[in-house]
Image 1 (spheres, rainbow, N blue to C red):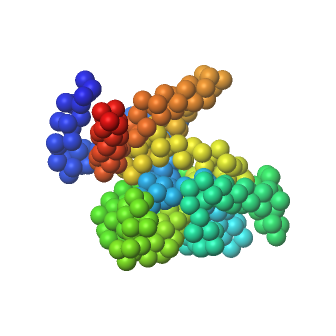
Image 2: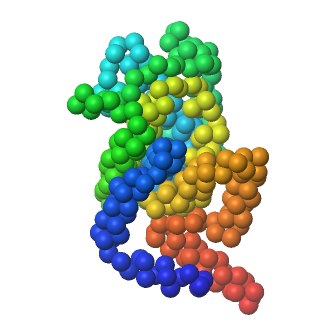
Image 3: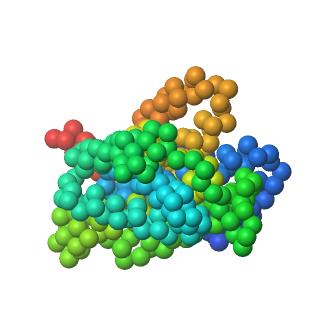
Length: 337
């Protein structure tokens, strides 16, 4: 037991409703005394928390490897940009359309490869991400703007009021973050969420118990992809300029590292992972030449000392502890023999 374990145990003993309410109050008040730069950093943090949570559905709950998640993020952003620039659709009206389009692309990608597992599935998702990026760079149908991307996207407006200041975008992001957390919690405790857990632990056993594993895995990809598309829409509405860089492989790696660093299957873990992979590097811009090296070192040390992540879900932590106990018992038995 580490020196921090008693403190962690006391924090876990607090009723979830209390600390959730406290965190909500802090999130509402936090940007008020800050400048626009730090408000933008908070907005970016919340955006990547939601991207991490959307990827967590695929990686943490269903146990599938996905390293092309940034492609759906870019698809959502470009859907919003094209609808706004060519058809004058208000930004907020494009959000459900972006969710739908990204979800359709998620289905189109996943349906032919759903039988693949492990590294093979991971390689195909990487390839899909690169196909999307190259298609955007090559200006398909003359709509995507090529390598320069698209600019001049309108700001979101609500009841005729244009959301220009960073603090307004922060609160818009906060609304969707709350919806995301509530939705993830409901999914986690639902029949579908339990089916994802069974597939992650043992797909053969899940099939033997009557679970339609193909449908379950498809739903994980589609829901995760669709929610990433929503994040792309929010990004386009704030930045007003988008480019194929949104779909680059490094973006997918950052999202994957958020899940792994924070702890797979964990909602608090997505916050911790985002602080390590997005917020701290952004705040350490004066040390830009060194920040990537330190992040890489931190990831290596964490993988060695705490492979389950900094804040793993209770289920994952119990599973790993059980595996360690079984391995220790097996070693003792083989040593005695």
